[in-house]
Structure formats: C-alpha cells, structure tokens
Amino acid sequence: MLSEERHNPALYSPRGDMPPPAGMPSLTDPRFANGYRDFLGDGTRLPALRKRFEAFVGPVVNKATL
Image 1: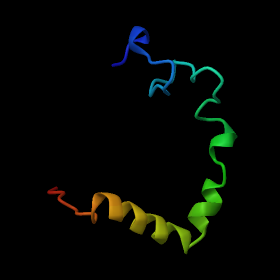
Image 2: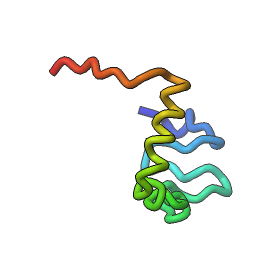
Image 3: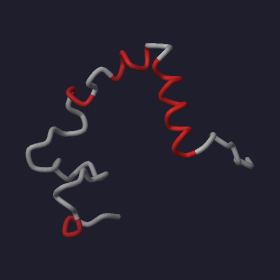
Image 4: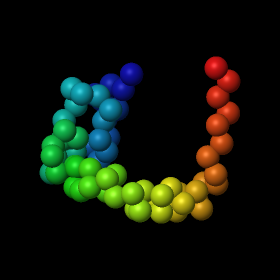
C-alpha cells in the first residue's frame, strides 16, 4: 500500500483518497475520455494500434494455465 508520504506529486496515485497532481484533472474527469470511445468504435484504427504495439513488444502470447 502506498503511503501519503511516498506519494510523488508529479504522478497519479492509484489510491482514490489521494488528489491528482497539481494542475491536472482527476482520473474521473471527462477530459480524460478525449475521443477514446470514438477511437474504439473505429474498426480500422484499433488493429493499426495493436500492430504498432506489437512492433515494440512482440506478438501477444497467451501463457495462462488455468
């Protein structure tokens, strides 16, 4: 668990009781959407983004053993 003393004011905290960085909106602010819903709804852009990430990190490999 992250303590308030260890909170880096330049980064967003995963804790809900910590404020956002100075001058930044909270993670629940509608400005974070910034076209995200439209981006996901566009069937041509999402595969292109997956391909771009794959170029950086390699193909997705499912190693789950449930």
